[in-house]
Amino acid sequence: MNIQYKKVAEEKKKSIAILGSTGSIGTQALDVIRANTDKFTVEVLTGGSNADLLIKQALEFNPNAVVVADESKYQYVKDALLPHDIKVYGGSKAISEVVEMDSIDLVLTAIVGYAGLESTIAAIRSGKQIALANKETLVVAGELVTELAKEKGVNLYPVDSEHSAIFQCLAGEFHNPIEKIYLTASGGPFRGKDSAFLKTVKKEQALKHPNWAMGAKITIDSASMMNNGLEVIEAKWLFGLKAEQIDVIVHPQSIVHSIVQFIDGSMKAQMGLPDMKLPIQYALAYPLRLNSDFPRFNFINYPQLTFEQADTKTFRNLALAFEAMNKGGNAPCALNAANEVAVAAFLADKTGFLEMSDIVERCLQTIQYIAKPSYTDYTETDKETRRIALQFLNS
Ligand code: NAD
Ligand code: MG
Image (cartoon, rainbow, N blue to C red):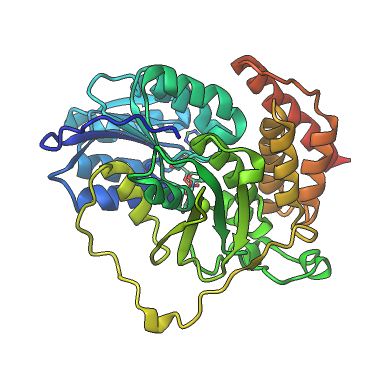
């Protein structure tokens, strides 16, 4: 378990850096902070290319520094914030630099994909506590990141709802061994569909998730069940588990967010309406629970909570993720890179829904295996896999 207990000084406001503040998680985190200005201050905001939203957020939350990753937007953001005594930087490298600021207590990593890895490592290296939304960080380099966190005394507080559920179930139980965990999966918009149907699926259909409103990449991952595969690997590293201790169970209502089974057979589940603000707030405020006005669950609206086996024959991504996890080394990094290329191609109407799994599978077979990768090995694997994936796409 990646939590080292420390009594938090509850009277002091937590100073937060939000990496990816213009995205789905980032904007919801700002909703949480807006409702709790007595608990949190915003020290840093970073965005990719949505300069107008980033400026609007900066004007409202008055951070010390803002970074826009897209350098072509730097001057625009700088000019807009010039009269407001907010430092403005441009480019990805600057994100990894601002997270080192002494004034930051906790960094929320809400950049999507491999692009979030470097800044998360930089934040851990400088001893910042982490609220981890960017699951790809642990998929790509779980061993390196969790070892570094341990060395630096940094806690990784999960934001992903399933992992937050496990974490909440473990409160008061950190000394008790886990027998296994069940990660719940909604099954996405195509649950129960067969390959013949999936062959014809377009991005507009895949982008309609039944229970959650999220960024485009994770929404496609949810439809293809790669999201659940990434979450299995994320859980392995967050909670120090073996592959056989992790199961995925499809639960279409998304009310039970995940389940821990202890060595005496007792099972604890965490429940609630599907609303990311809850796990975000729990990660930001830990170990406190804060008041919220989020809608409450009503049993009458959910006469049935159902559970079923995941269909890994049709949704091969989940099986591929287990395969990569069992292989270890740089295999999950390759899985992630291939998937990022495949999803981008699907979103650009350049490949089909089922072909996404083909690309991932072929990359996993092709990439040169490294058992104990260094950071450079990961960056090289990522680069090389993307090259191979693009080659497959264009062949
Ligand atoms: P999103 O696409 O809505 O937002 C991504 C953010 O990252 C934006 O602020 C964007 O500007 C920024 N960004 C994108 N590329 C960048 C780059 N190259 N450099 C710097 N910044 C960049 O994504 P999201 O749905 O908010 O997801 C963020 C992360 O949280 C993902 O890793 C996702 O898997 C995870 N997550 C999201 C949800 C959810 O409900 N959205 C749930 C669980 C986990
Ligand atoms: Mg999740």
